[in-house]
Length: 267
Image 1 (tube, rainbow, N blue to C red):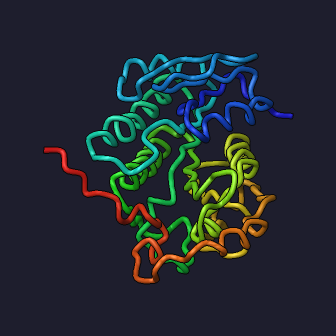
Image 2 (image 1 turned 135 degrees about the vertical axis):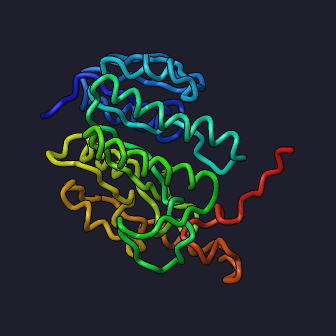
């Protein structure tokens, strides 16, 4: 089985970070776990480093000695632009600058379906569709995708931009019956991105093998990712919930409720 020497996982205190810090254990000799928030103590073959992604020098030190990066760190919900700027825009720039300076050649960037949130529900889109971010958070992820493309074209740093749908223990509403990705499928997708012989610059949608699909992953077939789970076992439970009004924007656009978040007054 292939293994990395040292894997950096940012955002390790978050929901998906806590999942991946455990599920990726077999894939690296050492996992360096980082977050601004407090984290669980390091386990076997783990290092814990608290780090503010907005601090360029701290991120530069964080990247030293790593063979690959899984970058989940940052604000994961819609927030005022000033908060998004520090963690998500400065942060991803600092990660890629650290990778460039220290010779890290592969990054798995946690992008989001909110990059394309203003595409209509039911519309099937692929990796080449137009960016249609649904808020400041989605804008920051669109920036990260473009930044990663620049670092590939100029410096040869391979990246997978994973447009994560809705990765939770189970789907919470009708929209998530389409966008849901199980933790098992998320882990396998990250593994495929880390170990694919050819990665280049790849955009891939993070979803399980759900009955209904808005996203076409054919342009990421070289990853060899085959989801094993589906939202179908949860369909009856979800469809027993009251549906949204069809006039609700959250029922019309792929980004769901994010298309209605804000604006945030900061003055």
